[in-house]
Amino acid sequence: MTIDRLRRILTPVIVVAALVGVYLVVRGEGPEAARSFARAEAVPLLAASLAANVAGLVLAVHAWRVLLPGDHPIRGLYAAKVYFLGQLSKYVPGRVWGVLTHVAHGRAVGVPGSQMTSAYVLSLALTLLTGAAVSLAAAPVALPGHWMWLCLPALFFLASTLRPALVTRPVAAAARLARRPVATPPDGAVRRAVLLAVASWTASGLHLWFLVLALGAEPWGGLGAAVGGFALATVVSSLALIVPDGWGVRELTITAALATVLPAGPAAAAAIASRLVCVVAELGSAGLVLGWSRLRPAPAPAPTATPVTPATEPTPEPPPTGTGTPPDTNTGTAPAPPHGDPHAPHRLTPLGEARVHP
Image (cartoon, rainbow, N blue to C red):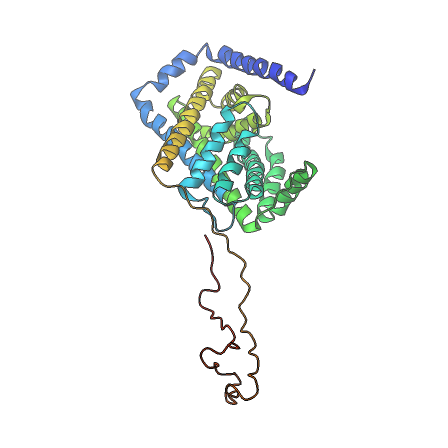
């Protein structure tokens, strides 16, 4: 049995098993939790949840964009378009559509495919690293009295932020082994990407916090469980390569994380509501960006300079004996020969010699 055939068999089995598990947890107290979301008092919290998730997506766009240093048109609206198209590709079977989308749109504006691939791979690695770091926020609630050992990975994260080579070098080495070498950006760009990714994870996790508040969880106790639990669930579901977008896996992980601050039924209801909020935020943001980009012209490709050979003044030939005018001893240059002299050299002017062609 080939790997592809095994994956096609296991994927629906795992997804269905995970969804059945969520259903078994939510069927008891789930309907009551759903009614809690329908209360008028919950509407502002639901709106805040959606806004927090959108803010997380915006920060994620910037975290990816700073890994593309240089002067090129991938910025602003076009950068958001490329990012969201890559995000939408996760709903398509297969794991290569995201990077192919980035490469195609980068080449369209003059950015080499190797640079787009490098940014994509490094962004993925930094996203997993920062997500794992933010997930430590759930440790004090999930492991009361036994979370001090988690200080070690926290210290590694701080060290990798100060010295990005601790992360970029292993990623580059793994890419070389896969015969897909990546070019690492400057350390300053990596640090900015890490800080923006942490901010993105925090904002995205707040959407789950607003949902657990709507279900009556204690505010400060639920903050760490929500932000850390969402980051942990997203990282775990991303590593479940055979499950499209981590369906079922993420919900089970969120349910387990929130079970420390909510009963099992409401915790599962919050996990399902989180999935709905994320899908609405992603599709809505992508639709808005793509619609807006259609109303504006596409950015022009980055101009490429044509190599220019500096123009040199030709050395004039000495005039024949008895003709012309002797050289000017004050300037050391020969004056122009008489008009119509066949021996007159062609004089070049510097004006217009160095020209950059778009």
